[in-house]
Image (cartoon, helix red, strand yellow):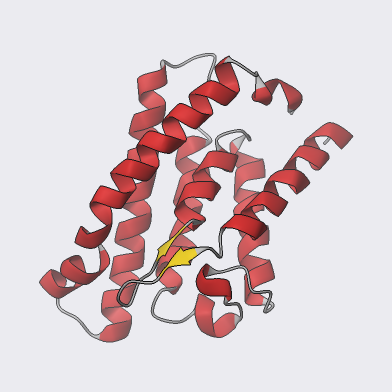
Length: 177
């Protein structure tokens, strides 16, 4: 691991820690910038570094730093009703870490973004449904359906920002594995 890769990872983690707590409160599960900023930064990293970034973010939040949605932190949040959405954040580096700018067309990035977003939503909804003792339909109504349109908007924005960063500015060229 080089100094450049550690520096880039630290900068991206700092960006996550600053932006992820920003929230629009709606219902049980708020709309958070977590699912915008995390895919945006992990797509710039290889899978291993992305997983470490998400793990560090969750660990800092578990220790009580107010980095989760609505400036919350602690084990109660991580293992509370919306904890599955936090654990589901690992879907992003796992899926996006397999996308490579050099070997795959751009449309596959959009596909990976959508799939990882849906996986994160499903993990979160299953956790929420179990925690709140909801049936399957109620779980979908509360934990998935309200977020599909938002997922599409976030995916579109992340796709174009990433495309701009990687094509025009070659941001990924800063990282050397």
